[in-house]
Length: 210
Length: 210
DNA sequence: TATTTTCCGTTGCAAAAGCAACACATTATG
DNA sequence: CATAATGTGTTGCTTTTGCAACGGAAAATA
Image 1 (cartoon, rainbow over the protein chains, first blue to last red):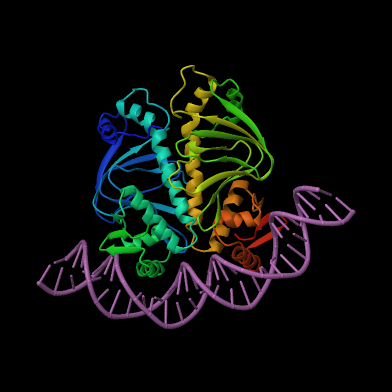
Image 2 (cartoon, each protein chain N blue to C red):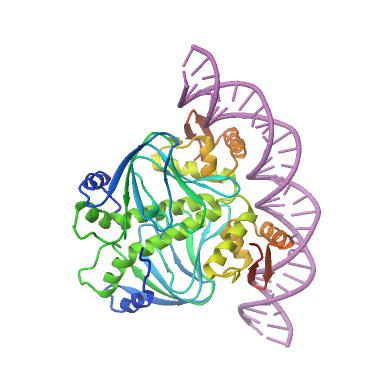
């Protein structure tokens, strides 16, 4: 299956789009967008890092997704079914393109490049999200904090084609991503080190097994 | 957004398809299919109930998805990234249509109805999966068994437009779906009953709050 | 219908995870 | 540069969860 997608072309075509669009800059910790029911916003992160975050009624914070340069997000990729607040928070200074749809699968009449490119690639883009989501479910269904950590590390290791890699999160955020208590996670991480499975140098993890 | 999809038409068009296809019948507990990397199988559950199940290295079983009549599944909707076995198991007698793709987003040259219908609707179908997956992630990120149960019940309640609904799982399977220990879940369910939040009559749950 | 298998419901005990608090390091910010 | 804010690392204690085991109910099967 062809999963290539030329994001650079996509973005450059965007400037020729016939639709309303906006480019905005955000400072660290600002809220980039809040997901709203029945809106179909498509956002492109041109620069920076951001997290899709949910706060539940108990005050727990969950990092649902982590976005870096060229990531696509917005309601297009997340049909909202509950009342929980979903925010995208800038983790560094960010530049973001916004674009609102009527019907994401219909081409516009003017046949602009952007729409053409988008409608051709949207299925693949969404399918890519499906892959990410399934991966995340696999992590979350692991029964122990230890297995979640190891699972996540092995994922990053595979992605980087190396037993050494940077964590894209602070440890505090990693806990929110794995949906576990931070101090319990720290304890488990310590045990992993003591068991000789993992080493940690600054923000860098080194896997020592297999 | 238009999320309607005429599954009946889809299936009837299937018979005019130009591609290899197969219709098979399964008994309860038989394995309908195993997900295989780099294959793009599309399966349609014409009748019966089935679960997508994963067994991990610790022997834990996880029910990843639950399928009922007219559900679509197969690698098309699940890009495989790990080595865990993914099986679809029949929970009752099932009738299933199988179909293997080369490139799921390309129309065939012969312009058969099935392909036309499929390529028009595939994005929506996948987007529907995305909704399901996000919902599942929301459940799994809940920190306690109690919240998982309540979250799942409230979901079924919303779907049924009623405070009373049938569980689509046995309690044993529900535990595998929520990714918790069965006996711990039973204990929590008992507490929910004692706290007057939930009633259970046979396979039927009644929500007593709000 | 008799018998086997699966599921339900329960419990004691052990292990894991959550909570709260704190000191210290590192990073932003006025 | 001083100070505030945030992140890291740790620990004692409590609560939740998992594990193992068992008896009985319900359902499937011979």
